[in-house]
Image 1 (cartoon, rainbow over the protein chains, first blue to last red):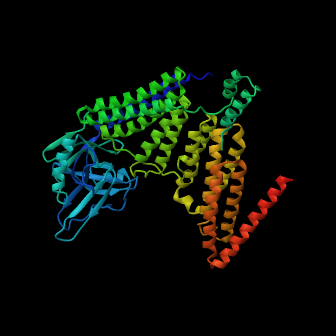
Image 2: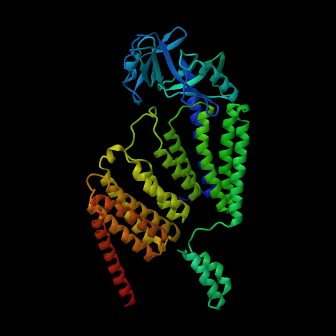
Amino acid sequence: MKLPSVPVRIVAAAAVLAWALVGLVVREGVARAQGQEVVLPITGYDPRELLTGHYVRFQFRSEFPTGTPCPPGSGGYSRRTDAWVALRRQGDHHVATGAALSREAALKLGEVAVRGDIDCLARGAPETTWVILNLGVDRLHTDQEQAEAIQKVMLATRDGAATGSAVVSVGADGKARLKGLTAGGRRVDLTWF
Amino acid sequence: MASYRRRLEQDLEGWIGRGLVPAESRAAILGSVGEARRLDAATALAIIGGLLAGVAMIAFVAANWSDIPRIARFGLVLAVFLGAAGGAAWASAGGRLVTSHVLLSVAALVFAAAIGLTGQIFDIAGDPQAALRAAGLAAALLALAGRSPWAAAVGLALLALGDFTNRSSFAGGQAAWLGWLVVAAPMGVAAALAWRSQALAHVAGIAAILAVMTFDDSLRSRADMVFLSASAVLAAGAAAARVLRDRFEGPAGVLYGWFTWGALVWFGASGFGDHLKGVGHSIAWLALSAGVVVLGRHDRHAPVTAAGVIGLFAAGASLLFNLGVGLMTSAAVFGGAALVALAVAWAMRGRKAA
């Protein structure tokens, strides 16, 4: 069999790669749109602080009264690829109710299961208990003005209770995908435009 | 070491001057030498100009990035990639091979950037290692399509970066025992020889040395044996490249140098483990280095000679450390080694004179 000429092969390879990139974007977009929506509290995070370029870096962190016990499984499955976090609705947002090593086990602990793990810091009075979720999502890219405004709000309350929330889509694959972020009265939604 | 082509060019001038060869045969004789084409100054300047124009365009777009809708940004990224690849195809159709290779390399780099930018534009959280490996595979695909050694070099570099980038805990699946360089580097070597590319030979040679460092912890538990095996494999590669120099002069010569460096480096590293550590290893390292110096001088191959000289220094230091003795003993050991070297040199000189 005779191979096509070099120019034809280059064009074919470029077309395959371009389609692969478009396919990735469409697949992620569909998964984000079809996923189950959860709202999680966030705080500012990063030793350098929030911005390098035009993105906001944040942490899924909830603060609970002193003496609140850590959710079951927290700290035990740190950065494991097979770990799942269970979430339960509480008012207008969701809270972590535990971590497990399978989706089924996680769903026994809460109504939504998402890939990730939990770090927990239970401290004595007068300190509070911190529950931090690692879901593979920790930043939002946005334009500079928007990012700096959000940074200002989140920096001011960095060590306190959450001052913002992130809207996350949990897909059929259990992966968390960011849909939007609210902080200091500003809302950023991830759309095609 | 002057290349065969350069020596032939000089000889041809003399032969033509003496009337031994007709002047009109000059181009045909030089054209029959299978060596990679060299860039002239004008082409090099054109390449630099093209790259600077690309940087200027990127800076302009970056300055107005926030004002462009997401979907338009993505379209722009794709258009730049397709433009570079299309330009490469067009240049290839017109027989402008250097331009085609440059544009394919740019396309490979733009695609790597496109993966990162797409993740940023649509906030797609991904695994950095997977992104780099995907970019490396894309560059390899473009290299194969266009028979472009420079795009292949870009691909190898991206795969190497992928091997040395931490894997995300959200990547799924199990981590591999070996890095992708273990397979990619030999393929790069084969491509460098097939396409007569010294640039790709440099990248593939370095990749072959670095591939050893991508082994998983489970293999590193017997690091000395792994390093010794790697040294043996690279030494065999150096021997093969040395033999192949007549057929693939440029790239084979480059690989001969890098493989020799790799063989000596990993042989030295194997002596730092508990099993092979000792005076015996240091003496063997010293002897191998001395042999490499002799080989490098014999072949008039500066990188090989340099590898041997550096090896001698390192092996000497290792021997002193392993002996753990006073300066008098060290002086005796080095004095003995010097006498052996001098005796061998005298014997070789005598045989040559005879």
